[in-house]
Length: 65
Image 1: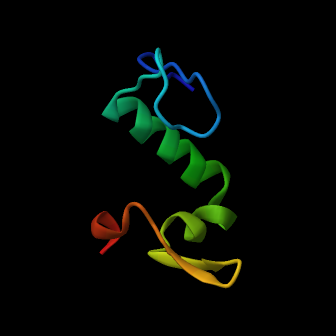
Image 2 (image 1 turned 90 degrees about the vertical axis):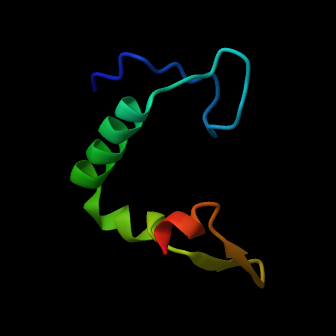
């Protein structure tokens, strides 16, 4: 994909020693996600969702508004 300044140490994206990326690489990753899987793109734009009977707010809710 051309992610030249990214190294993922785990699948969930939370902090871990040696885990890093750049804004440019995240843009490239988001673009591939949007182009390759447009049927799922509405999920990532949600401000909140319901799971296990609870409302869960996105960690990006300020950005999304």
